Figure 1 (cartoon, rainbow, N blue to C red):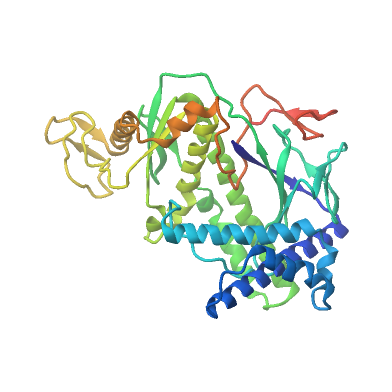
Figure 2: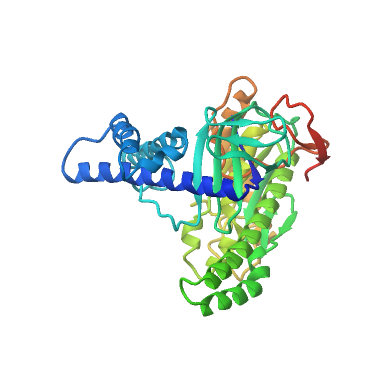
Length: 427
């Protein structure tokens, strides 16, 4: 399976300028190739092949006066930008044809130098891990990195990213074997909410930390300061970075908390079942800010890939499943209830229920039924995870915390790195 590991990078001034050139060149190649394909489609011409675009927009463009500066960056960066465009088109075509599951994917769009996130992607021909703990990137130099842990295997690709507040990150994708945990008898159904972030079928409640709500006062103040600055001025740019940094802190805290909670749930249960919530729809209601602050979608995604990684069972109950309407004691459907009703009594058997706990138990029963019917994808992948190299797409965020008792190491990040030093355990 594939895992992604993110590390903070600290380029110097010259390396930041080199990375800015790489970001710009990759963006120009993407836009030029996208423009050619759109113009060909508008003219009724056949789809322009990647080989033709590579020859015209990379190889030949370097010898022109308008695009001579493409030679200042690694050719791998430019080729990978074209491959990413091909992937974006493939995802779009698969989504239109119904071959791709999930939400519909739109066609590729032009990139702007004003985008909050700039990135380049490289394969093993354009980067290497050095003995002194730095990462060499072609035509950029050796980047200093903060190693929070060792990589479990040699990386197959590297993505260098600059976020909206000016931070740089190195994102490695590695192919590794699943880390199967010892089997357990326990399983859990999870009801996600707002007053309590999650209620488990055993009655345990996980309070919502509400990171955005706690930072809202400071964000409002920084927003007022930003609105007073003259557009295009340096002071406005400084104020914008302050706002971006505060939002980044909120997102980092939420992501770290999601990883810790999801890891603990996966370790404590052999099977985990959740509801398939329509988060995008709830994000358009009056509860939008609280829904986005909770981050349900990211949390469920972490549970799903960690279940495959550790050999656990994972399944989702359908969106139409009436978890809050059915009595978990007798199975009688007691009808819909408004949100303010938190306690109710079954009209059939007289059992008193806490709304969230009852929903979690119903999700557990529905998850067991799905697994028994053989319609859960994760158990099949998990059963074969120790025998085959199960293909699981690498997450866009950090791959989770190390297991307890295993210290994180920094220094040489390779799987057989020499001279790595211990820096303490991750939670």
